[in-house]
Length: 80
Image (cartoon, rainbow, N blue to C red; front, side, top):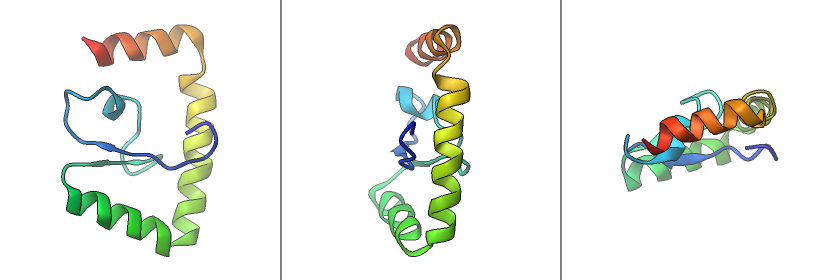
């Protein structure tokens, strides 16, 4: 995310990445292979959406995830 990559992550609540990605804003949680394909194709076809989500993902990573204390707290909650 920090590099502007738009993450597609497992939607399963047991997976830690879902807690790190704001759904539909800076990435997409995907519950099935079909949903992964649909989201990936959407990002491939819609350059404006891809660019907007890329900027948002990078900003979110810088502002929320790269703060040491906040980072530890997010991971702690995600791994519990």
